[in-house]
Image 1: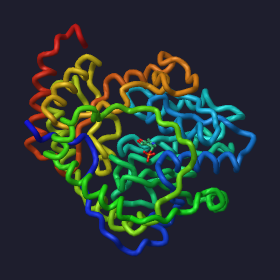
Image 2: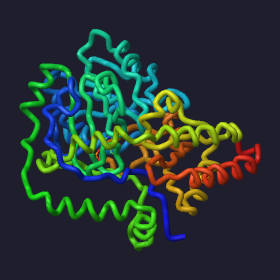
Image 3: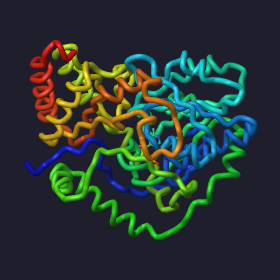
Image 4: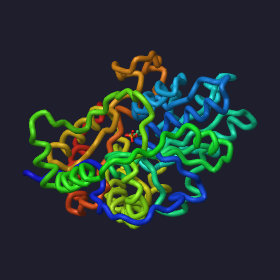
Length: 383
Ligand SMILES: Cc1ncc(COP(=O)(O)O)c(C=O)c1O
């Protein structure tokens, strides 16, 4: 079979329109070159606000770019475990990690499921600790003003993200004094010709189609799915030519109805054995999901289902595969994986299925049939 579903990333039209003053009003946006740069900028702003504080709480399982941003901003990441069977921080773990050096908590939106900002805020009540909401993976389709509750919010326009434009990022805030700080540290937009970008865009749209993606996968040396640690040498600037595409790219994303696919997955999964279940938060945040996240009963069953779906070109992904402590190329000691048992369990048992518009009901049926076959045949001893 030549065609393959890519795990993530929506095909999109590149259409120009006048850039609005504030794309996410009433929040103010500060645009930069990537989501990692946005996070580094947000951390830098937090440091300028509280220079005597240097520690930042980070979930033990997340994108290693979060660590790159901490290193670029010269803050110390302190890992915190997840709550059980969830991709949300353990509130007890956060409480335990907070001290007089804590500068910020990085609250990650995981595949469109936001962190519980109100609960985190209760924990830090009265202290100058900032909540930085990393929303690289989550853009609301509705109610923008209420969706983000962090003091600083960071976005990515990178590959595979909801607002994919292949480059760019932003820091958003409502706070006037943080706006002043961000104004003074955000690099000036850089102007260059949009032509190479437009060519890259055309090519990418061909390669995102099932046939294009299938062929791309056959080129020796091209591998997808492995997350690696990439240091951030400096905060990069926003390419000015991208600003003309922002408004219609957002409108296009917000118009996509992915609920039908989510429902199809959910109803299908509910009829299978309880060896596979949606991740906590899927139901409440169904309309903004980037992929369909599922938890499988055991690591071996997850790995088996993943390889079968992968072999059929159905676009599954197991995300980062390990906790941040297990990335041997991160030049920091982040503790032992065993200190973060819930994050380890999630890393080993998470399976995500694609939700973009090339996913058709037949592909979902095929995925569910494979999952059903495996979940009914798994021996009880493996549970
Ligand atoms: C949670 C999270 N934060 C930050 C980033 C970095 O974004 P970018 O690739 O635009 O630098 C990513 C990218 O995968 C991410 O998933």
